[in-house]
Image 1: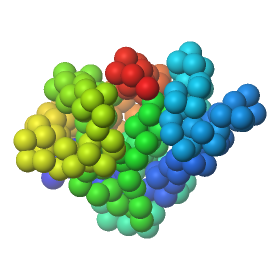
Image 2: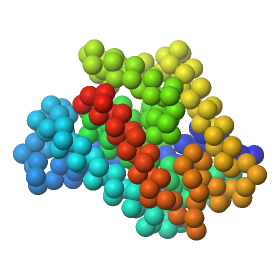
Image 3: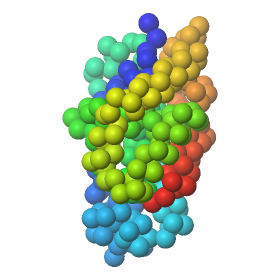
Length: 235
């Protein structure tokens, strides 16, 4: 049986290192150049701490580039838990690829002011976080419905909603139905790519796995699509 998109995301979230600590990431990402703004960026957001949009964009692009390179440099086996072997319907390289996309999502949301929208702990994402991940991954995949849902969340945020309120919205029935529709769309795309092929040699949405590695260009394109959307929606 082919995996659903939700199953793929759940497996990727369980990979070691998928969760990104916001404080540690912003401290590292802002570095020496913006050292004086690190504490304020952690307490508020990088934009509220005084970083110019162009500086945030530069940091985002640099972070995307690093993660894109890591998806090709690391072996498939690195960091994969023993439980992965039991998930035979989900190729290890595919789960690893999405694990890095999820890492990238967290970093981009931290840079663009979504402070605490996604919570991953103990290899699990709660309901609101899972919905947020599906939306963000949908944006990365070029799904128009995901773009529209993210834009609505951004309007709520610009209207004064904090991340706690946004997380409540993500758990509301109406939005949950839309998230389920996005997930179903991505599952169909996944099935189209995997169906009739050797599962471990297929890559949904973005292209082919070559010799157990993921194309740097594919990862970069997906991450940049989300970065541009988040930037356009405001920091």
